[in-house]
Image 1 (cartoon, one colour):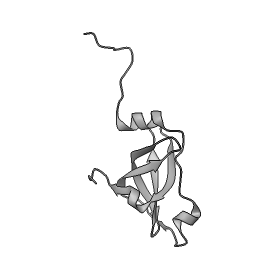
Image 2 (cartoon, rainbow, N blue to C red):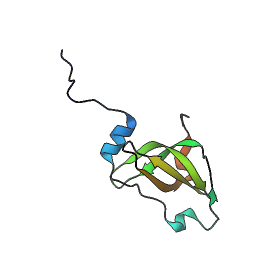
Image 3 (cartoon, rainbow, N blue to C red):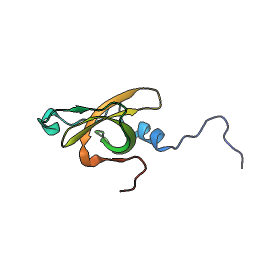
Image 4 (cartoon, helix red, strand yellow):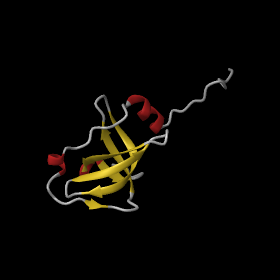
Length: 100
């Protein structure tokens, strides 16, 4: 069979996630983050994180930028070069590549 050389094929996790999601995920509220002070992180660990969008939940690769006793702030880079920061529950984060 012939190959379709006219259109590239990208079925990577990040390509599929971008197709399924809106521009920004749902972040935790200040009440959910809690009253504890935020510990800012420089050169944070790369992690796998579950993000909540209105339509779907997706797992993305992200970098930790801060945390409290119950929440983690991560920065996610999209393929188009844009980034967003979002607060998620601590349990939504695992070290990159680690199986749950």
